[in-house]
Length: 396
Image 1: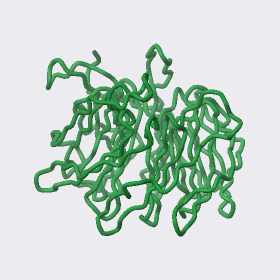
Image 2: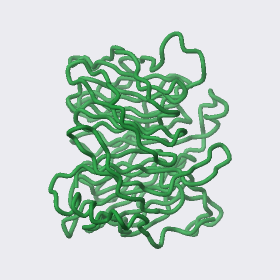
Image 3: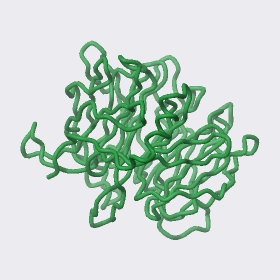
């Protein structure tokens, strides 16, 4: 067992002044955060040191490293708020993908979720840490008004935490376990595995991707009772393994990338009910037809204008590129761009740029996005970072 996060230290003191200028003295400074795997798990060797922070230059897509903030073991996912809380600060949230014994519920396993702020010098300061009440938390999502935070625990549960006025985490107000999987893919679907969640626009509805049961679980948020109520599930094709989701900027379409089947599913969003269509409109592969080796899809994002969609392939080591039909949201393949590393677990899209995190080669690479064609062009810029699991770009 490892102790919850009690103290954050900053390793690269020589660069603090530079980040202070980037964060504290600029009203619109894009900062990239790389969350990492930090220990040997047997099935992979994590070499990360915490959450890596970079200044992101939108003129050429370059990254300037500032340092590393240790945030416990395996801080694999980070997400920032869109609003400023009391004191005028945005808040970052991170999860630790571990399976410690819970102190709150002895006999069960838990990871951790933390709230952090950026100091004026760019270092991360801890607000508080709570148990996630499920093993191996892997994803965080915030409702549109930044009042509630949902944690996806890969070991089979969903947890929700209200947020206090300062952005810190209040006690868990909702929890649900998912012990049953579809068992189509024996190794990955013996039980439920909640891999991510996504809030639908202009509503209190959230969708959770259950990789283990091939379902997209839909919930309605009761703000007063601070709980979630199930409003049904959308079933993915058997053995798909839904992983991550993306929302189209026009709020009319949603997309899910399937880890096991290596497909992207397209769904319409009913604007009156703010729910997903019960059946997918399209399923399209993320891999070339002639590729026969092992690969698993991971991340999915749209361009800022919604004209193009991208998905990452771990194994094929590529970013699949698609054109989006503006009328029905359907996808047309544009081809594949080499990720320039091994196992592209995550990527971030920011304006005309993409940053890809290659987990097993300990690198990040930047690409330019052609606004007219949607095609990616490698910038030649590569950055060393230990076992990157998630890249997130926020403006501070």
